[in-house]
Amino acid sequence: MENPTTRVEICGAIGKLIFNRPEVLNAYNRSVSETLTAGLETLIGTDEVRVIVITGAGNAFMAGADINMLNDWNQKGDRAHIRSSLEATFNPTMLEDCPKPTIAAVNGLAFGIGCEVAMGCDYRIASQDAKFALPEIKLGIIPGGGGSQRLLRLVGATKALEMISTGDPIDAAEALRIGLVNQVVAPDKLWDAIDAFASRLTSKSALALKIAKQLVYQGGNRSLYQGIDYERDCFCEILLSEDAAEGTRAFIEKRKPVFKDR
Image (cartoon, rainbow, N blue to C red):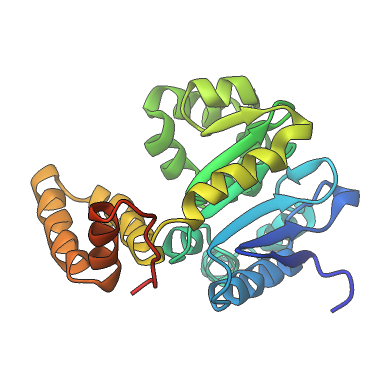
């Protein structure tokens, strides 16, 4: 495909998904949804890729949904059609379900669905000029890609309700302060920070990283004691893995482990 709306690049152990509509600040539409879904599936199925990074071409991460797509859904005047249309498009939950770590490299505006995609990633590293917003309220609507629920869990009810109710953007420094992002760096240092963070993950057991995600996303939805019980089940499972045997053996032998992801 020439000039796909989401480009796929593989750089060693890092797979990149790059929103590729810079002329409209990478606005989300059906094509972006389709190419993002296909690109994610490609990187999940590529064994050499151990970490997936999502970013935007040009000066934006993703400035929100294409208004024409929303207008089309609105004009259908049918709740079932809108629901089916939503369910047929990319869902940020796919990023949480992804067995590999995902990092959002937020290089500019992350508004609406762009903010929701970033929140669906496991980690978020932002440049100092990045901005985040759920501005749907200004159009008389609300987030539809899980934004309200993920923002609530990431930053708490007080700030989440403020952002959703006003639609006003916050800058990268505020995003870091409230716990929305992991790091904020100078724009020209963004990829250095991404590479450094990714290297901290690529050296780990892919099996252990996969189960760590499950502990947070699946275990975190349970009561405290149910979550602890779930963690114990996962611990028993992974302790019997080849990687666990290699990790403990390497520690005793004072060497770096060589994990085989099984």
